[in-house]
Length: 165
Image 1: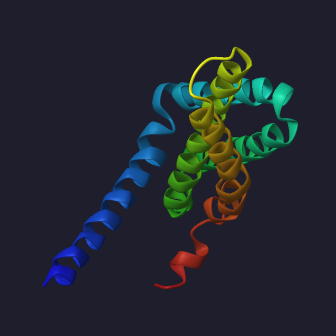
Image 2: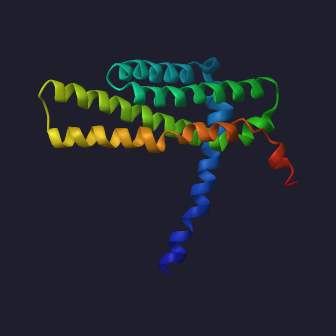
């Protein structure tokens, strides 16, 4: 009975993700002529630049993911502006995953910079701060590369989906 009750969440979870993805692409992406998304991506770029001084390899990884986000968001906006809504909707769920993974990497990078500053100043719990550095490095090396893997799924268009008819 427990397994049956627990399995009932899957359709709700998947449906909610789909709704959020559609809302992100169809409403949020073009909100205020795209300014909120541009601001977020610019904030991430500032972190890439700050991270570059301390960790050039990790900064490059975050920068690569950022470039994928810029490319996919531009592609989606272009499709929306040209009335290719099916193409934009086909890329909505992978775009949501892409942006969530990128945003997670950005926040991890910011926490890494803060931990490095605290270690440099001799402040805070060294074990906790070292764990922050370690978890951020893991995320940027192991999780963040998924962003570039999602890029083709976002920009793949609706043809493959339409063939299921």
